[in-house]
Image (cartoon, rainbow, N blue to C red; front, side, top):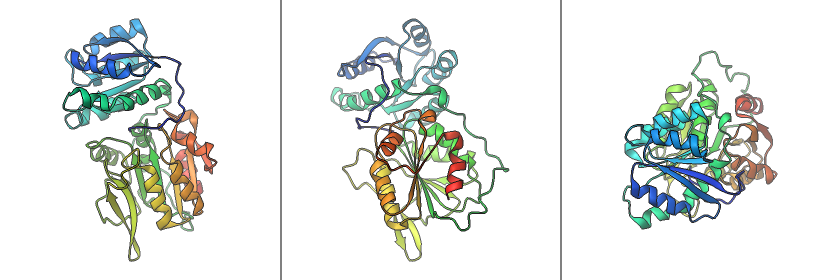
Length: 355
């Protein structure tokens, strides 16, 4: 879910930020990082969730950055309580692996995004991620928190995908970023177990999260959700989530299509990149590709959508009204590459109608 794009986002002229972390050093460093932008104003800091609740009520920040492991009240408890009191865009800043479960819990509770805190608190390493943090804070300021839906509970009575035997599509691709964990938990469980084509997804996440997220999404879904392995046959009834740190593309192996995982290309803003997956699918499947570009910062997916359209495939974009951040879909729509637009609530129906 990282972003290096300058795609337009809805932000106030100055974003007022509250920093929550039990480390005085990290509070100082995050303040310095955010102060590099003239459009961000750090209006206060808090040492734990309990103090943050009080300061949020007093200062009414536009965005909150929050650690997870804190005394008194940890980050997950703070997100839950704050979102119940008054929804505020919250960006989690956390060490990766030890907090994997907590990060996903915070996102489920309503946090907008997260940034992986460097494990070594060296000044130069923290400042390396300053631009990414500033971009996330600015995007969070424009996030539509009330649009985030709850996860859909797996049901056995979803409309089956029968009646599409003469389908036009051989693979469904989904590109998504900010707001993605919540949105996919709404969309993917709606797919029936007999969904007739494979699904491949790119969700911008740091290394250490996608495997855990795929397992949690699998528990909710009728289709099998997993990270693909190198050379795995791409099969119907399975949704493949690209592993963080490696691009997902496709290769032919006889009559079958298999997954290929690679760190190359190295010059993409994200790894995995939606553009890489989209382009590869267009090359392998030709016109029989449906690409879906959903909530997220930046423009990843726009160039790939162009490849799909050039080969005769189709593109669906998520409507602004349901996006947490209307960046990626906007870039596709403004490039004239979207064949249909659907809110998250109606996305499954539109996908079925166009298969």
